[in-house]
Length: 533
Image 1 (tube, rainbow, N blue to C red):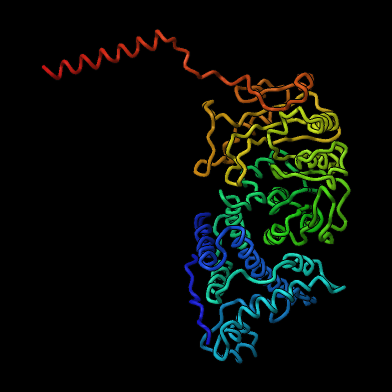
Image 2: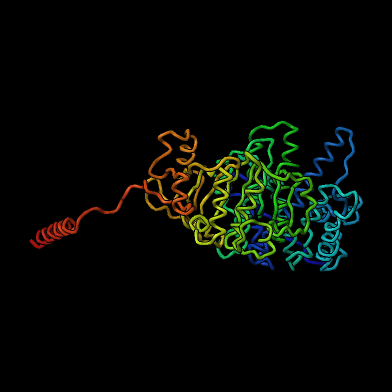
């Protein structure tokens, strides 16, 4: 008989703070790390599919109960024994597996695979050899529902769990199960979505190259709030990663108290994205579903080359979008297969993405994005200059925020970055710059893992942003305007250069400093003389 899972957990019954949630998620990560999932790029996807299947089961249980109460039909996406409640849920060890199976009691399949009469390895064989293949094939049926297509895409490349130990797998499943049953006080957010939000930042930790898929949450919140998207309009991210921008936009739109009809549209036909990395797709889709977005409209393929891996979820996408939020990958290079689709050809992916964004933005639409500052000040390469000129001619670039060095250092990118905000349809006349490299005391802002950039750090920015364009308060020690004539004179160099910052350097002359030192020495000498007496 195989060794039983400890079936114990220390998950609090009530999650009172983000620290509680982080602790609970870390405990599960530790189980995965003691097995084969040593790094974030292994344990994040592994824990993501567990979160997703647990949420799916809870969601379908609730839908079935609602349908029964209303007397309507309900067809689940998964049937026994592939539901979480069958194979993953803890079971009553006091009852024989046959009795549990007859009643379809929680964990009956798990009891069959791990209880009396089972053989070590049966559980892993079921997960790898039956469960995953079944989930992958859900979308092949001509009558497959949208939800089944999403499930199939999440598990498209999932051949086996990375865990080699059945005990570790069951311990992890038990903790996920317990976490899903915990209550979340104060924030009133479903535990699974909050748990995933606690997990994803580990992708951006230093030495984890998964940081390319993760934009710091505080940066995302600032961009979305600055643009302030409205209900009833489309949202798009051409390099979606784990869909942080789309989810934050969803939260922002839901806070506007939309109607039931509008909520349905928000969950099924408002949020669109593209992503090329196969390892990011399942996390992205699961992340959106866990946050209540029923139909994640994510296209799997290369946005720039237009090479498609799987595009059915993107069916019905508008040709252009009202809002674009994105963070194109730093340092990424593209060949001729991508460059052929753009007027200004360049190997730098960010230049091609900027051209794509301008084309994908509807007239009157607004974009908020992260960009490598090198793109802003580089003028020697023709494609850089031409793309920036296109941006300024076709869009109103109304704001640039200069971020301090180190905002993305934990994501494996130490480059200096800025935030761009522009609206398509009118040319740029002047750009409003805001300098976040300085603290409110006008000292250089140091950002690192122990001192990250926080949303509250942007309080002064948001106060000044809300002022009318010609209000005197728009210009300060950390904000200023640059006209289009000045930009052209600088050959389209858009780098933030703060001429308003107060000069805090030491203005004392050498003679004054020498006098200070001499006075100090005299005071010390007098003190020593007094002691000797």
